[in-house]
Image 1 (cartoon, rainbow, N blue to C red):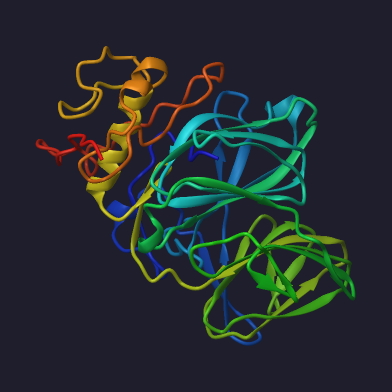
Image 2: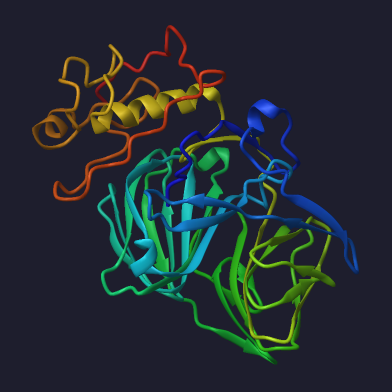
Length: 385
């Protein structure tokens, strides 16, 4: 899923509150601490973001927040629905880029078709995780299927640690077997919990679990003391460590706990439990890119815009001299096979796509106060391997 804000701001994310208004402009303070039975529980308030167009499906975003931008390595959490697709138009996100992260899609109802520039085609179904590793650069599109009438689900991103940022793009899918106990059913789609382990590989320890609980159930979950955790309320009333999580909110607890106590109210509950080892690295997010420096974001945006044909390439780009509006495909793609940017990135960074797919999304304009490209951008002259 794309971050569809029309004016995304460059945001510094770390495992503590982000500092400085220039890095958090447009984000909600969105965090309220409450005393739980064994420590503080922070409640993260969602904000509404339209997915695009006048009949846009609205998503609710709980990460990032101004005062809490990461939970472990999780840096982004959108959830949506249940939406009547005939009224909202469903999910219709054209081709868009990602770098330095993995997208994790989880559905409760409906289906979504996924296509990416690494050559992967998949249909995301309820109860089946779809994890796309963007690595050094990928583009993908997401459309709810023609037979979907109600769409309800979530997409999360986790930021790659430094050692994994240049990995090749890939796609993994997994349908976890349910784990059952008194009054609950769990599906562990990432990591290990409740005696179940997902085979899906991540570049650092992460947890992702769907929980369904009967009314009046208390579930005690053993967790690693070094991990942070978030509990997203999806349906029904529930509490975390005695603190009620309001509708559509995300409850957060920091490291140091070895037990999470989750209690359902008078109705059946659906929730997502996420967690992981703190990233321990400062990242920068802008639009759909996760990087480490402002200059990286500028270079990635420029490469994407040139490769899609939206903007003229820099003079030392492999595309220099091609007419504006010429995307990298067909003969042009064939002519540049084996070329790399000077910093080692493959060309094209964001890959090819089937010719009959809808037009890609253009990148938003760079904010003039922070994201203006340098007068002399770093060299990106291609080299043959």
